[in-house]
Length: 545
Image 1 (spheres, rainbow, N blue to C red):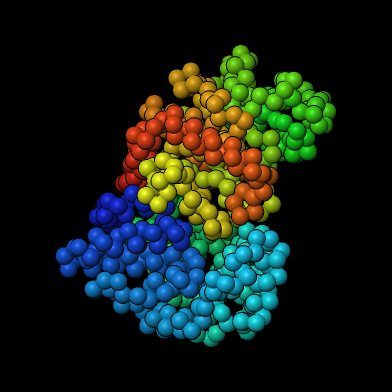
Image 2 (cartoon, rainbow, N blue to C red):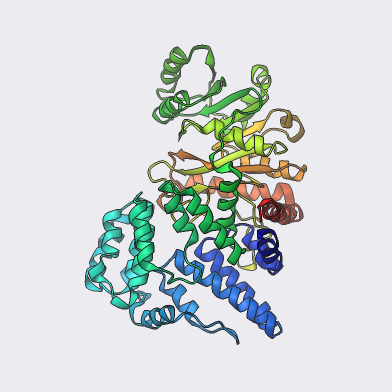
């Protein structure tokens, strides 16, 4: 039965592993970091326990490598034998790892590559290095890292050109090709590449293969694949979350929000983006919701855009015009103070530069129906220009930070960074915080928790700080990863932030830490991870045998 084998396998994991894997089982740094953290415990264990931990550590490294097949550094980690009783790798894998030593040649510290910052210059240098050193896996890895966030498939193709690959590393090319093909929407070809690869990577790539099957409409096969994965490796929490939602029906659910809804936006000098946001909002299923927009003293064409939309939407749209920009938290509080807004049972805050799918409110409604005890429901936010770039997922802050990062007490998880969105964050579950870009609040909770702290003006962390207060008050937030909202403001490696914006964000992070203190932040972090663990264990018990 799944309950006894998968749940028992999960609870048998070391507490340290459960805490980290509750956040997810994807991401190179996340998995490699956990593997490294388990080594001392394994080394100090008795023989049987050391053998079990050695197998888990090797499985974690194999999964990290399968997710990043061009990373020769990960391969080298896997080829070492850090413990007695280190499990023997399959012969094909061992052969590739031996060959890897000849084809992974990182650029020396003096190479101009390390000093280049301009993306165009980096791209030109990569293309020349791919020609000059066609079999050096390092340049292929760097090309992929530059290519996918920008959807630069010409550069990706140059890195994956079959004739430029050593024959002994062919499995790595097939795995990377499957990722690249799925990233550009070619699920059938991606599945064919995985079929050609066979069972090369220990444990395979169940999440990647399942996503191919789902996009091809083969859900039953995806469920069978993920079920087998969870039975054999209960530590694969990301794959389990995907499986759980497919089996429960949560993956496809759309439902009315269980009460009346007010949709609230505030804006400042983003006339074009606001116009596009309102267009996507008006074209969606609003379930009878009313809309309020607060103009924060815009000096561009925003007033004209809003008047145009009032003419089209009529009484469904109400406008508030302020003479000056009072910042995001104060603008939110102003909207919250309007009696006609407060008469609604639920409130949605939207940024003024998003693109909404037609069923966005129904997805939030489904989350509210599944988790009626929550106070806030949010979504997955992706880049407007390249949806492979995930900007925000479910957050359980990490605190206190490590000695190496002791300058701050709080860190937001970065699990979603550094990898294309290929379905690994498409799940519904409780958490501590979600982005304020698109989130649903219960009006009755406003008085209990309060509004948004104006000390976090002009923006940044005001939504996170309020979510922390919700959690400290005994509530929680829910992440609806089956809703992807596109955000026009870029983030991550393609972001363009001014020094003033960066400075303001850093200052607000300090304010947040000073407001709540080290003990409270540590309690939120521990309590958040416990929330994730309880949710996973609940799901294990709900799965049929």
